[in-house]
Image (tube, rainbow, N blue to C red):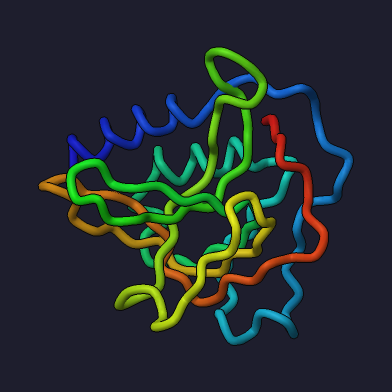
Length: 165
């Protein structure tokens, strides 16, 4: 657990930076009719609290594991250096060490049991809505946090890619 806390802190530091200002978009809101199937305890991460809420997840991981989350952000992909396997994440830009667009804030995402057969990932940068459950998985002896997807939906209109506290 000590390694997980240290890893979470390091990841939070890497994902946090400077932003060119606030956003005027309203926070995401949960409506009972739309999300009743996911239970009452859905964590909705809105633009106005994005950095603080994501940081809280990493700092208080035990409180969030197994909990359903809903948030929006830009779809990104990468390649794991040790395995050459692709991985996907949904993030926004926030405070970073070296400029307004160098901090990535968000979570890795994956479908339970692997990506659906024939899945064609959305294009990097597409604005998506994520609904999923926080879980840990083992990555070379380290616990890694991700969102196990229940839903991944490309949005026609996106929120602000830049967030602050």
